[in-house]
Amino acid sequence: MAEHAFLLESAEGLTVEVSPLGGAILSAKWHGTPFLAQTPTPGLASQVFGSEACFPLVPFGNRIENNGFQFDGRDYRLVANTADPLVLHGDGWLGRWSVQHRDRQAVTLRLRQEASTATPFAYEAVETIAVDGTRLIISLSVTNEAAEPLPYGLGFHPYFPRSPDMRLFARAGRYWTEREGHLPGSGGPTPETMDFASGSPLPVEWLNNAFDGWDGRARIEWPETGLAVSLEADGNLRYFVLYSPSATSGFFCFEPMSHRPNAHRDLQEGGLVRLQPHETMTATMALRIEGLVTR
Image 1 (cartoon, one colour):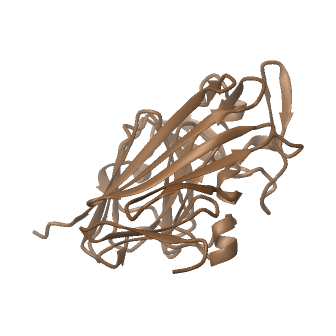
Image 2 (cartoon, helix red, strand yellow; image 1 turned 120 degrees about the vertical axis):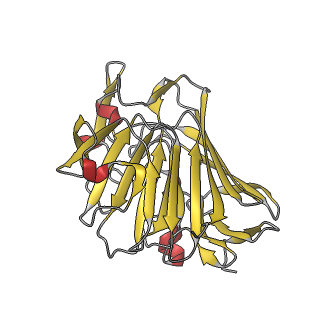
């Protein structure tokens, strides 16, 4: 087992490797078969281990246009935190979390972030990663520790294996195009090639699109390995981002979020939550693993 990492195990064959570096899941397997894809990212866990399989999004996910926003009549500025020119995915994936509790089935991690010239957000985040039989459950909370109200969001960024025969099932109400800077463009009806309500393969081209009006459920099937994952998110997560560089990338991301990317530029409709000082919001995602029934 690598330094700064530890293993969670269920009696049913679920094994999940976790690191407090970035609050990351390094790997997740069902009887030895991966159902999350170990992928290099700019996150802290990847900087140390070379890859990771999932990380928390806190106090927001995705990008903020021009690295700034206006809230309650004040202008707030952030500083880019990776090689990307726009600040990306908040602080959680780049922070060193402390271990609050740990046993063979669960770990609870805590991160305290102070406001600085790089970010106006001051908060405490708590993440619990647990295995329960055939389920991997990830819960995340954020408490505003700033002196003033601020808009917060949460989410999860799992990487799933992408294979030629895999199928995605997910139902959403609206689809967003992508524009320059990897930001959402215009919203509208979901095109046929991106409608996964009845289950379909991913398009072969570059994908980086937001969806809203999501019912909080998704399913991924991999006939090649005989595995399926059913994803269930709580009611605070009604958006998702679908990302994959290409059909041969080996991975794709299905990212449940409480808000749309760049929601700081649409505070009325984007899904961010106004948190008063010491107020808390939470989000939970569960992945249930099962074998595919052959017909």
